[in-house]
Image 1 (tube, rainbow, N blue to C red):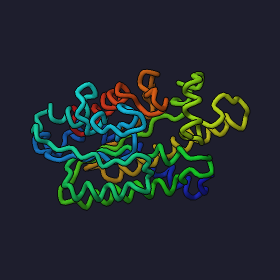
Image 2 (image 1 turned 90 degrees about the horizontal axis):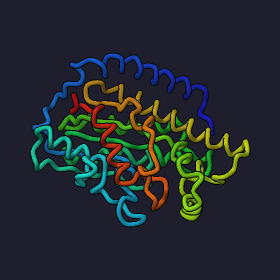
Image 3 (image 1 turned 90 degrees about the vertical axis):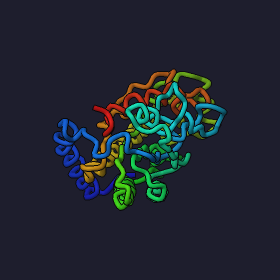
Image 4 (image 1 turned 30 degrees about the vertical axis):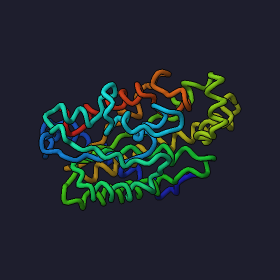
Length: 285
């Protein structure tokens, strides 16, 4: 499904604005100084989907929030919660994982409302994989709709009395997730049995032009979503920080991917997500 020319032009303008803003927002030392010192953060919340729920990192087919890159408490992951505590935040800093496995961008505003009610002062967002991971390419969320959903969630967070600092992570490369395990018989059987991300993973051994083009179209949509995330975050320069594509460009390895579904990050993958995103946050120098 292709976005309209008008929507694409609007998105391109927003992305360009994000690039221009990023030249000052993300490179000056003043911009990196968090308005709220770490020891003032008492509540953080994580919004998103199964990636943030750390699905497939413990028992099969289950969410395991203790292993989350954002609010997890598993020491080997060294989540944002644990890193924030280590920077002088109180040990009783509360972390709410409001992410929902299978969530699409349309569910993000409801999650944001929950974070506002919780009084979150730091909020992480990782959303978009399920908007692209559908049964067919035609069922993927249009880019303009995705952008509107994200903008609505950020607008909701901006109304919170706690004035939360927001960190927006990019979407991992679905093409790389496919490339890593396409040669694995076990992975291919699992993808087919569980019907995982069929827009990308259907007919995994096929090299026919139609299948190659289908996978490229899915990744192109993910790239558009990432541009929309960057642009939406740029609209709140005082409170929102974009990861600069750190997750999107991270070269996941096989050990970073769970062997329970050969698609979600493993526990070491969650640790990698925490490691590549933390330096991009408001709390890191």
